[in-house]
Length: 242
Image (tube, rainbow, N blue to C red; front, side, top):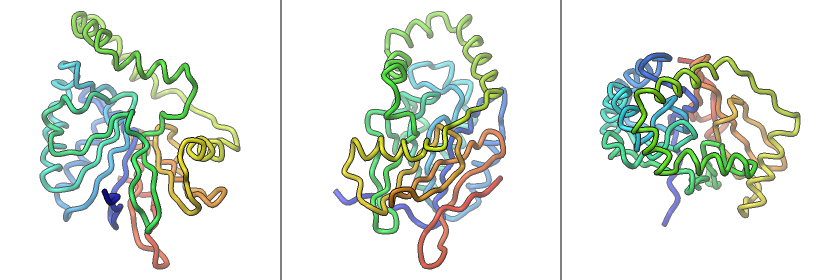
C-alpha cells in the first residue's frame, strides 16, 4: 500500500494538554481551522490532558472540544497519534472520521519530499519502566477501577496533571542523536529520511547523521506548532505561534 504523503500547509500540533477546566486555547485554534481550505492536520499526542476512550467522564468533560474536532474532521484530513495522556481513541465516536494510531502502531511511516517520514507521539523506544507504565495505564481492569471510583479518583488525577505543567525538562547534548539511533536500531532508516515526534517539547529541527529530526514544540505554553511550507524548492517545517 502506498505511503500517505505529507503535503504543503499540513499542520503539526503536539502536547497542548487541553482540558475544559484549563488551557482552552485549543478550542480557538480548532475554530480558526474551520475557516481555512482543506489541509492535513496531524495531532501528535497529548492533545488533551486526560482523554481515555474507556473513561466516559473524560470524554464527557471534553465534549465541546471533541464536537469541534468532529466538525474539523468533515472538512480536513486528520491524523491523531495517541499519547500518554490521550489513548483508547477508537472508542470515542467523535473521532470516527479521524485516522487514529495507537502506540502499538507507532512510528507510522509517511512520505515527505519523496523520502520516508517516521511519525510518533514520541514515547517509544524508552526504558522498560516506561514501557511497563504505558501498559498499566491502558489496562482494561485498571480503567474499570478508575471508572468505579471516578468521583474520588478523577479530580485527583486532574490535579496531578495540572501541577505537572510547572515541571521543566532538561536533555543532554546528545539527546537527539540518541533518539535517532533508537529509531535506526529498530527500522532500516535510510539517509535523508525524517523522524517527527512530540512528547519531549523540543521545538527543534536538526539534521544529524543524514537524518532529519523534527522535535515538535509544546503547544500548551507558547501555542507553538509547525506548518509545512515550500522553501528553496523543498517542503520544510516552519515554526508558528497562534
